Length: 258
View 1 (cartoon, helix red, strand yellow):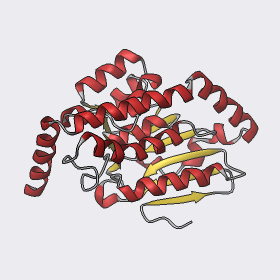
View 2 (cartoon, one colour):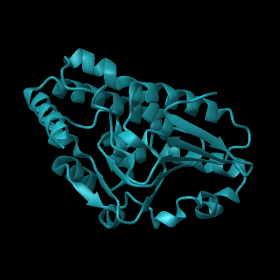
View 3 (cartoon, helix red, strand yellow):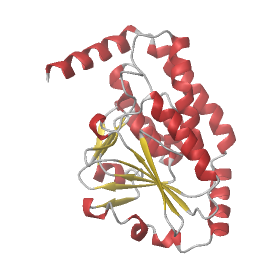
């Protein structure tokens, strides 16, 4: 299958690497990328020899800067926003419920929806010196792809609440301290995924599937989907607020001036 906004590379030892491939846009998620990620995750489930799925970003600046404002813009009603956001929620859920271990290899910063995507992965390996933030609050909204609901399951709930409510960027070190980042790596290790994950890759597929199934049961992954749906509805209502529209206009104006 040919992709234009992502790359899909499966190697002989069972490691699949999917790369968000819009480095000129800091790997922002477009509507086309939503469709391609959905197809890629469906294809990945059919890979007979797959052991681990790695999700990363092209370039050195960003893993993912969130939704592309050309597609995910502010001038929408709540109903229109829901229809726009929900397909990516389904993609994030595909990743969160994937039947084998998933790893976000964070090559650079992640903002907003980029953090939601990374949170859907089981483990996060981050390059030292990067920054990460659920900054949706600064745009007058809340996470809209289900990543906020997932965050409460991945780190201590009160720390998740604090991060979401303050909407600030965390350094790699701070993200490691709160438990969101599992391993801090150097940029030189970005091309050594097989070495970084050797302790996973030397296990059998049967073992890995069993552990992931157990983990998904612990997360109550099916009921978590309904919590993610509710998050999309909340974000959709905020989407039509004047606070959000004003924040997006300010962001776009500032970008034009640079």
